[in-house]
Amino acid sequence: MTEEPGQKDSELGHPHSSMGCGHKDDKASLASSQIVPFSHQPPSTPASKEVWKKGGRMFSILLAVHLALLACTLVSSGAFEKIAVHDYDVFFLLTVMMLVVIIWIIFYLAGTSRCPGAILGKDSHAGPIWLRGGLILFAIFSLVMDVFKIGYYSSFYSCLSAIKIIYPIVQAIFVVVQTYFLWVSAKDCIHVHLNVTRCGLMLTLTTNLAVWMSAVTDESVHKAHSKLKKNMTEEIFRWLLKVGMRSSSVEECNCNSQICQIFKNGYFWLYPFNIEYSLFASAMVYVMWKNVGRFIDHHSHHIQRLKFRLFRRTFFVGIMLGLIILVSGLGVLILYEVQVNSSTESSKKSQALTMYYIFNIVCLSLMSLVCIGGSVIYRFDKRDMDRHKNPTRTLDVALLMGAALGQYAISYYSIVAIVASTPRDTISALNLTYALLMIAQHTFQNVFIIEGLHRQPPKEDYKHESHQKDFYGLTFVNINAVSLRVPDTASTLAAGAAPGTEAMHTSDLVRSLTAPKKMNWRRKFLREISMFLLLSNIILWIMPAFGARPQFDNDTELNFYGDSMWPAIVDICLPFGIFYRMHAVASLLEVYIMS
Image 1 (tube, rainbow, N blue to C red):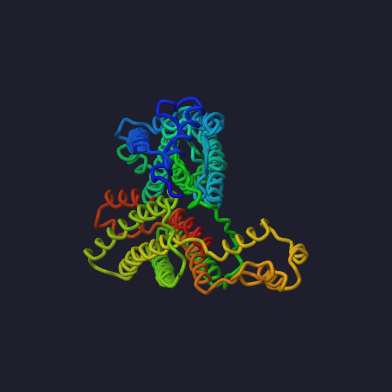
Image 2: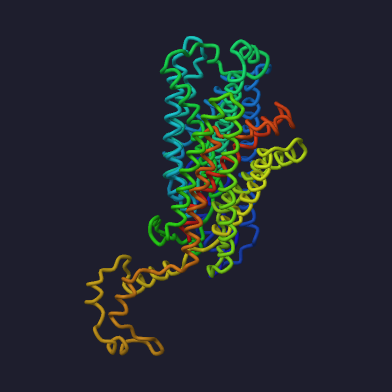
């Protein structure tokens, strides 16, 4: 039986019943939608519902765009002293947005999701366990950051606005409520309160993006001030703050105690986790927004219970090589921080940059070769392509392609600056090689990940489970019970078998149920490649996220583009490159499990 294309993503309920459960109208609409394939109703009915769905989506998108532009304007304006917008104005807006989102989430959990017929299906692809686990990990570090912020700002309550203490408290509550909401509701396909839910989800997404923009701006201003403090005296630094970029209001207060310094350094070191939390939450909320009013095609959305076995069916080559890259990268990061950020000698700075570029060139070269090998292996993979509708996979691909543009931009700017500048030294040659390999590695890795996400799971696991269920109706089979229920002789089976079918011995059946499923060489190599790329992307995320940023320490780009243009380019593009690495880790974990 075929279904109408509009039936899969149609909505229940009338457009005017956005408030209240409206289960009577929903049931009537459901009944009418089920009769569509057998009746001769005009095709205008599903079309009108589809038009209204697009109208509801458009309204929520417009709401999100306006709020995002307002937040972006305040955040960018609050970073400069000459503009009469203070940082506590930004915190006030973000606090109000987070409070509204908290109220809507409570309304959704207590009211909308409990209405009769509210959730008629769940998207098995949305919110996988490894993505929700990563969200909880980043949420924990974000809560620790908020605790450090509260402790730090509380030391200056006499000379600060109260909103600077209220903001981290509200943010901690927001992180807890939103994490619970995404853990229990990420797979929901809601069918009541459609427009209210769409607007609530878009408000949640916009709030996360606004918090992300604020964190990125605050971190960039802090690093810029750290560079100024290191290169000039305290008097000149304070004068530049008055005429140029804004410092935090806390700069005017004294932070002389040791506990104050711990709080200050602690929450800035934890900013990368809060930044990744906001982006992860935004991605999950967007998938929920796409699933509002959606019918799941159960023929194409059967749940694949794939088991994550990290230390089975592998040669350990990818894991061991990835761990070597990870440990080596941590050592390079520590030495880079010590020699560049803690020393003013130019020789040590050149040594640190040379070491950093050599490590990244080796790592990116290996990753590029491995990605090419994985793409070649996919040419021999006999698994079919998964062409079913999957909003989660569509978002993953879009985020991979979009986030890679940030690193592409930095690389191309560096290439132009290096080629056009003179003289050319060893560091410039290493920087040019690094930029070219960064472009190649992003391209080859995107091709490998996208091919892996579009492959169907291995068929032997599914066939093996379905064979057991068809024969006994059980998922877990007791072998002793099998030997009692199956006749001992093949003749008995043959006597009751249908013509043209082959009889099965008891020993053959037991052996088929107990024998381990063999994995071909293609799947083993794909797992090794995925694990190596996963660990390599982790260290390539850690290095720029925690301070190793040669774009600010290499004089070639600074001299070519100027002290104002080049830092602005890096501040805008680098967060996307950092997010790309973490999103690639989540996608590679999915590719590993699906292989």
